[in-house]
Length: 274
Image (cartoon, rainbow, N blue to C red; front, side):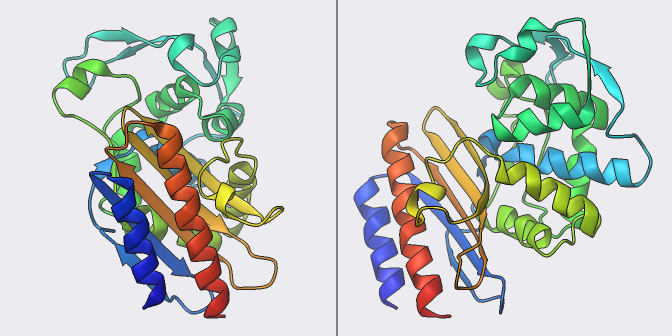
C-alpha cells in the first residue's frame, strides 16, 4: 500500500524511539495501525479520559457538573501520600493560580482542562472523581490500555514509574465512541465534543488539515513525548479518528511537524478510499 510506504518513510526520517498511529474511518470502520498497541506515557492526552469519567459520574448522579470545589495547589502523591504543589510556571493555564481559595464548578474546570490543558484544573477534578474510576471506565469503553493512576506533576510517583499510560489504539477507540455519541449518552457526548472543538493547541493533527476542517482534538507533550488524538470532520469525505503518539524526539517542534505530516497523509488517504 502506497500510504503505508509513505508513512513508514516519514517515521524513519524522524529518528524517534517510536511512533504509534491508529486511524479509524467512521463510515465503514476501515482501520490502519502502526505500533498502535504500544503503551506510552500519556502526557495530557489522559485529560480526555478524565473528562469522560467526569461526565459519566454526572450522568449517574454521583455528582453534578455544577458542583463547586475549592481551588487549591496542594495534592497528595500517589507514591507515599506526601504533599506536592503545582506551579503556574509549569502550567499552560495561569489564571486559576490567581484564584486560590475561591471555588469553581466542575464544568468550568473541565473546559480549561481540555482547551488550554490546565494541569491545576485536571488535578482538582481528578481529586474529586478518583483516578481508579477513570481507568475502569476506559476499560468499559473497550480501551484497557488507557491507565490513569494519578494527577499531573506528581514527581515522586513519576520517579517510581507510577505513570499514566495510553496507546494509540486505546485513544482511537474512545474517540470513536465519542464521535458516535456512545460515551455516557448522546447529550453528554455532544457536550464533550463541544469542549474538544474549542481546543487551542492546534500544532499537530489540525496543522496537517486543510484550513477550516473541523477537528476535535487533545494534545499532550513533555520531555521527548508529543501526542495528539483527534476526530476529523472533512467537508466532503467520511469523518475519521486519528491518534499519533511519538516518543524520543527531543525537539517538540519537530515532533509536531511529524504529526502534522502524518495527519496530512491520512487526510489524503481518507479521501482516496471514500
